[in-house]
Length: 149
Image 1 (spheres, rainbow, N blue to C red):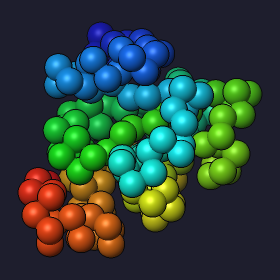
Image 2: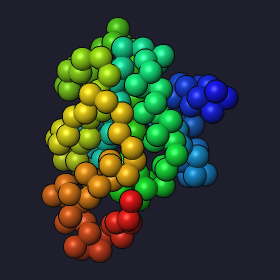
Image 3: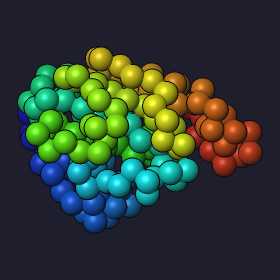
Image 4: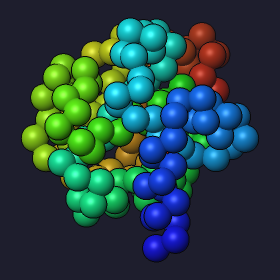
């Protein structure tokens, strides 16, 4: 329960703290209201996790699953963006229009590739990402050597 509390508190940190934490190897998701979508174009692969509340059991479970293996996501240039406040009407929520809990995998061109209504293991996420066209191109060019799950 302490880890869960830490994850939820970490989700509230500003982006500067997120960057510092990621450099130290600690997993910290980014808040949707603090991430400018256009800044990620061809730089990061967003995984956007939506919920109507930070207490949604699916949201809590997804955060736990991602926290188990953040290195596999980092190796694929992933940024985890969370939006558990529908009232904030973030640009992410307006563009992707989720209903309740939703996991959206996007490629570096910021196109939504996969949507899931239930939590996914990191292994399943990285296997899906490794099939994305831009990721396959990275692998062929030798830029993304982290192909194991």
